[in-house]
Amino acid sequence: MDTRISGTTRLLGLIGDPVRHSASPLMHNFCFNYYGMDCVFLAFSSTLEQTAETLQAARRLNMRGLSVTMPCKREAARLVDRLSPAAELVGAVNTIVNDGGVLTGYITDGLGLVLDLRDHGQEVAGRDLVLLGAGGAAMAILAQCALEGARSVTVLNRSREGLDRAAALGERIAEKGLACRVTCVPLAGGAALRQAVQGAQVLINATSAGMAPAQAGLSPVEDPAALHRDLTVYDVIYNPACTRLMEQARQQGCRLVLGGKGMLLWQASEAFRLFTGKPMPVEALKAYLAQQ
Ligand code: NAP
Picture 1 (cartoon, rainbow, N blue to C red):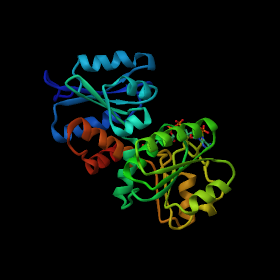
Picture 2 (spheres, rainbow, N blue to C red):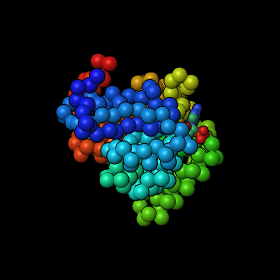
Picture 3 (cartoon, helix red, strand yellow):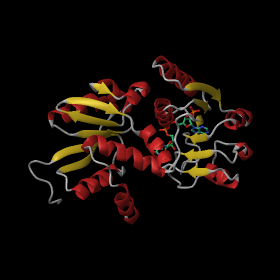
C-alpha cells in the first residue's frame, strides 16, 4: 500500500465507462509523488445515468477534482456550477475542479493541442487552419483555436450530422464576438481538401481515420499532393505513433509533422495545473512513462 495515504489525503478521480485501462491514475499519482503532495487519484466506473449521483458524491466526499471521459462529458457539463469559456462553447467537460462544493468544468483537449504546437514553436493566433473531423476532439480543438485567435478554421467532415454540429459551434463562436471565421465543407473527394489546404498554414486530423486497430493504415487525405511544404500537419491520433497521414506529410516535405501523444500529455498537464496550481513535471513524467 502507498505509505503516503493518511487521514488527510485528498481524493481525485477519473469518471466514465470504461475507465480501467486509462493512464490517468498512473500519470497523476506519479506527479503527486514527485511533489510529495497529500493526494491520490483513482478510477471510478460511472455510466451516463449515474453522472449526477457521481458529481454529488464528489461534493459529499470533498474530492478536489475529477477527470471526465465518455460517456459522461456532455452530461457533466450540464450539471456543474460553472464552465470555462471553451467548455461553454463545446458543451462538454473533461476536467472538473471542486472549490468548496462549487464545481467548475473545463475542457482541456483543445488546449493540449495548442500547447503542444507552442512547444514546437507554432502559434495558432492569426493562422488559417484546416480541421478534419467534427467529433468530440474536433469540437474541442475548434473552440480552443477560436479562443486563441485563429483567423479562420475550415472544417471538413464526412457526415452531414457532423457538419451541422461544427456549423452550430461556428455560430456560437460568432455570437461570442470571436473573430475566427468558421467554414464547414463536406469531406468528399480530394478537391475540397486541396482547395482548403492551399491557403492554410496548419492541417489538423481529428478524425479516427488511421487509428489502430479498426482504422489503422487509413488516411483522411486521398491525394497527398495537396500537402504543401509550408504546412504543419498535426494528427491527433496517438496509436499508432506514426499514422499513414504523418507518413504522407513527411514524404511531401511538410515543415512540421506531429502525432497526438503530445496533445495527450499537455491536456493532462493542464488538468494537473487546474487541480493543484502546479506545473506537471512533464520531462520526469515522460521518462517515467517510457519505463512502463
Ligand atoms: P468521435 O467523436 O467518434 O468522432 C470521430 C470523427 O472521425 C467524426 O468526425 C467522424 O466523421 C470521423 N471519421 C471516423 N472515421 C472516418 C473515416 N474513415 N474517414 C473520415 N472521417 C472519419 O471521436 P473523437 O473522440 O473525436 O476522436 C477522434 C480521434 O481523436 C480518435 O482517433 C481519438 O483517439 C483521437 N483523440 C486524441 C486525443 C489526444 O489527446 N491526442 C484526444 C481525444 C481524441 P463522421 O461524422 O462522418 O462519422
